[in-house]
Image: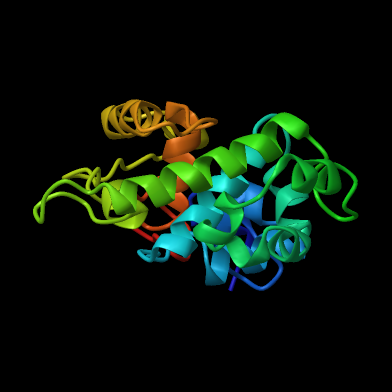
Length: 211
């Protein structure tokens, strides 16, 4: 059989997709680096509901601002050790002395503003949980973030169609800011929402979203 003919009938991949050496199609951002590939295959987009899990990812998304996600992911275990497992109550108790220590802690990103934001967000997380006004409202950070789940997911067919914001991420960012959170802009919140399974922004055609 003429392999040239077979190859010519295979539709080219959409912009933003890559056929990897294991035969699986992934978004290009997750195709070349083993750490990112594993993260995409086993974690990105899978549901995370618990308070500590959502808080961790919110903090890491804040540290990612202006940097690559690969940089943050490679430092994740160091972050977990430095921020005591991302248990909000523990981080909320950090003092200025802790900040000074974290600025020089090996293995994490030494940005004082982002470190201080993580502590502020921990305090806002604890305050929101303790001050939850009604049984009908969200009782913790995870419930609040998930309450902004959109009715429909976007269906990007190329990298140019992947949204950077959605009305729900804009509204979530505004709500969090009103509660005292920082480094929670609409684009960062959409990245968080995609990472923990609230909204699917994967390009159609990957092995995780074939159609």
